[in-house]
Image (tube, rainbow, N blue to C red):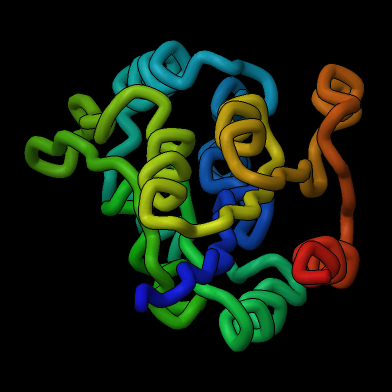
Length: 206
């Protein structure tokens, strides 16, 4: 007699803006290069955004070591670690981010080394020369892969580049997103506190 298959829950979270500060905004503040304030909240095309950023790094001679020093001074968003710890007591959790391995180690340590999927930079003598995206639309593709393993996936993100992930997931919501993005996608739930996000996730068990 065959056994019944139980669908398990997996929670997928964006990193920057959801549980950590925006790295590029911190670099912009540190260097005074205001053009680096442009993020995926402003530019939906990630390829175009990164090429824009790399041009600015080259123009202003901003090296990888400087960026890593800036990141090293950043803390998690208030309440993020306790939220993540409580979530991990009940569910499997994955961080799906468009950051890079070279940037993520500091936050990974602060978060207790979560399962984190992100991209990789090309670096030559401390100069960022390019980037390697794992694949096109990697967040949505990761969601599909987990669903193929019979996981029910709930996802949360804050930017344009999270929307396909949120819509691919079995349940998706915007978290601390800009008003313009919320207005563009009224079909998605939206919240601003970790308490509400945790409640939204756990209520799906009922």
